[in-house]
Image 1 (cartoon, rainbow, N blue to C red):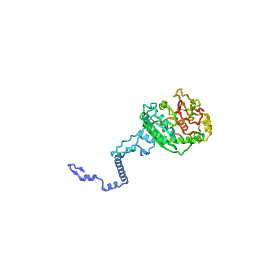
Image 2: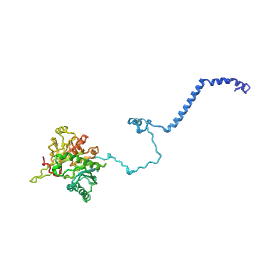
Image 3: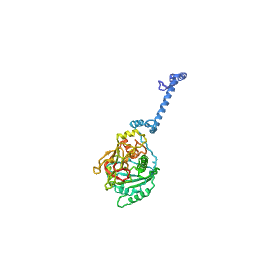
Image 4: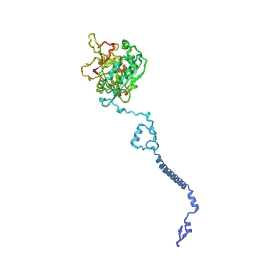
Length: 406
């Protein structure tokens, strides 16, 4: 309203300034005005909706890509971690209590094989396959108890297969004897494993060591070794020592001596005592499975079917290989080394991680070799060392199947 000159309100003057009713109706019903009002309303509603949604979404904000971390590729995960900080999620509920008796944590990083095995208290697993071996048990355990490596760091394991004699009873009796001796610290543990492979062969020397029996025999022995290894090897073992039951003599410090070389796989030389008519020891050479490969042998292998197993020391295969048993001087430096391509299984020290890496004893033709020779081939293929000690002699029983030094 307008003020009158007398200081009051003049309604008539104010009314005269207001547009007529029809003019107002005409203005607000125009299309342009209605479109403007509609657009302004839409903008206002959209703005209010976005403002309220943004405020609410802060409570559910997702850091990183719009997918679960379980569905991210490795590259997406790296980009997420590199450029966005993941929020710390708190669970205010009571934690779930796990049954600790069913959960075991193993840290193999703490298990090592070093030259300071005694000082580091590194555990050794001694493995021996047995078959009809009762007659060798007494001497075997006498030599075992003479070992100077601390007995509380040694675990023993045996696999008995397809035996017809009283191997099991004799083994149990001898274990009881040595573990009860007051003059020696008992071994940490002993395990007896039974597994028959239904492989039978006469113990007659000619048949057992004849050429025709060698490939099947070596394959059966490989299976026995693999079953024994898989059953007995524990996370705490640093070394695995394969030792045959029919060893006649060996140094008491053999474990420390071989460990000092710090090799992946190492074997001594294997000879046997045999006396001529005058009582002289011919010092027969026994293990023809420890050898250095030759071009002739490699050429021979290429000419054979893949499933043929080459066995050493027999006229059927002229390999031209160099045998460690024919080398060496037991009066010379016992720590002299030579690199080998095949090994025998009479006395073998292996770093446990070699076996853990998957190197075992092929019960089939691997590069035309099986069992311990195939083991050596497989180890070298994987980049492990295979070393022999030509002047370090372990004496095997004389099996009479070879002519001494032949």
